[in-house]
Length: 566
Image (tube, rainbow, N blue to C red; front, side, top):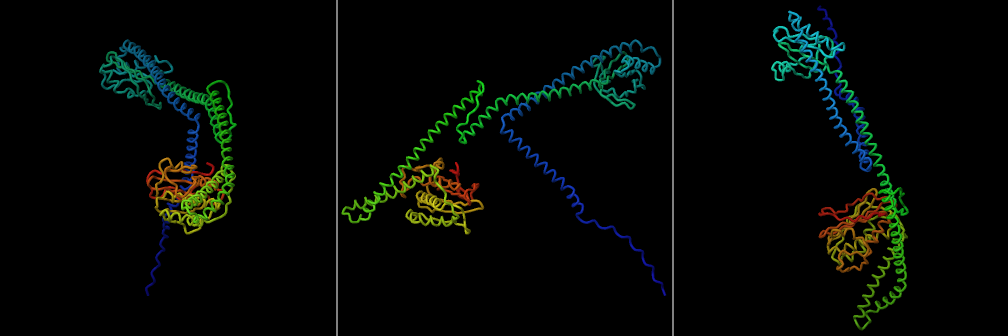
């Protein structure tokens, strides 16, 4: 029987496979705080930049100081650059003259002593060391001497100076003789030991068949120029700051009175007519303050006169309106009696006169009612009796009141009402009066075209627009449409018996609600009036759910935006 085969050894466990996307998740986890921090830094930087820009725009002093700082920095930088160039040139020219003088002495000495030794190498070495010994213990320069007649010896240099420190262009210039027996240049001095390379001035001279090179390190000169440049930079910064401080001090003496005048003008515009500026000295600013005080005093006097006149006017309108009601009542009784028996008169003209008298009395009563309402608004005695109502119901009721007038004019009223209630806290009587005035105005100027009435609401406001397709408004008339007794065409007959105060009263009623009454119009394209009211009485109105310019209307719109408190 064949024995069972031995079991195969267990395979080594395979390494676990990498989870897909692990590296990406790790990178996201690592970089997420960094990105969040960078985003926070960017937001802070933008906020600081916006604040600085706003401060720069609002403050004359900041602009003057900033401009002075910028211009003075440029001027100081230019002056410092040219001054540094002059100092560097003067320093290096002096160094070059001294080096050339030292070279002349070395050439004369080499010419006397070069023949002492018969060995060329010894001659060069002794000549170089002799010239080097003249530099003193501090080692102001290194020397490199070369015999041009020697083919295999490149010369001798002192203190481990590399022969490559002498640029080839200087050697060629000296050999060609284009500059005579002397030449100089700037280069880098390198050494065979551990001594670091350094910038240097290299002067060269030739006597007979010998070339002598003096190599002057410029470490001291560079140190001097560094100290000078730092001193100039420090002095320049201090000078710029001093100029900025002087500019700030000078502009402060001018800006503070102007700023006080601006604050006084703002308080004066806010109604504080007793505001005055303090007069100090006799200079131009003092005359400005005196002129401002004279202007404020004259303005206060004129405003007081206008207030008195306006009060007299309002009182006159109110008194006349009240006083006319009593005789108007008597005339009304007589007119009603004549109108009732108009068919019994033998002369038809008398009956027609009774009808005209009746219609004109109705218009007179309407005019008196409007005058009384205007006088209440002028006196600040108008009150708001607000209640929660659906604007759709008010629109339907008002449209029903003017439906007959629209039919007589050949116009059709088209309603665009939302399916959901448009609730708002409004005064029923005043809102109905506004809508009635807008609809009657649209019928009067609609030229028999359709009149579209739209209602909409959002979270904070409700709005109603009345659109006609009549003559429209001419340029500039959009600002006058709410003026009292204003008419677009004075020669145009008013067929609906309006008083000319309807839109003015509508404006006052809209302002009493804290709302807007706005008008748009274009010649030949008709006009549109928009009433916008806050949902809650007393809230501030920030927008309207309906556009003022109707969709598809071309041309440049004319606005007459009248907000509460204007």
